[in-house]
Image 1: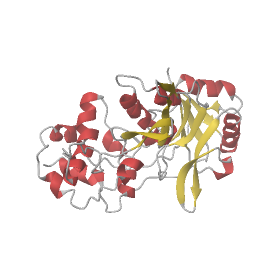
Image 2: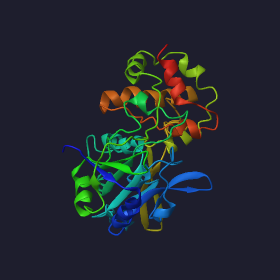
Image 3: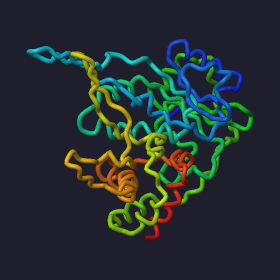
Length: 335
């Protein structure tokens, strides 16, 4: 649908939040002891709208850290398996989602629904309404403009709020879900007037097209060893990433009863590719670091027709040894 621009006065924003909270589970950013993170159903007074990034991404909403897939009961003659896919997930509003995080859901969808639809992921995704928020601040870790997004990008949002100098917000209605919110809250939205927006500046640091082209011939380049020597293999980058989707599947049995579950994993872990034979095709950290970069900027553009990165900067900000991904991608342009 064609987008519709409206205006929300700053004193009406809380009313919209409360109206949505009355019929939905809310997920919104909250600041606690100087750290910003998304929380379920916070009071509007606790919600922040000036954050740069939350510590953790939103992928847990559609791809939980641990998720039961099926249960089973063993007997002497048979095993009875019960599929645990629920019929419905609660209707959920993600509030104050920056463009990098909003764009991550399409990337996750390209992974979980590329060939066979993952019912758990798909049902959760369909339950979401995303109220995006343009970035008014950035820092040295942000590089969204280098991966085709921007601090006021509308991709992935149903409604995008953009702060104005007056303290009010533009509200761009972008999808049918956003239009439903508009129709149900007509007294909150006003006709938009010309106003100056407050949008962060994020310098483009590299060309992702150039990086993808260079990676096609860089599999055996010494770059990988030189730039991975300080990597600890801790997996923090994968757990903080909004688009990393590696998982492990385990069975947990007690007596005759058991549960099969999946949990987050990381290709940066040494055990991730370890075969039962003892062979490990990625036995050293440089190979695992290469896999991370190649997957996001070479394999996914080829297979999924999308980059595997939204430029949020969480991986670099959270790395204990400063494995800054944007700096390394800048260097890759020149190899």
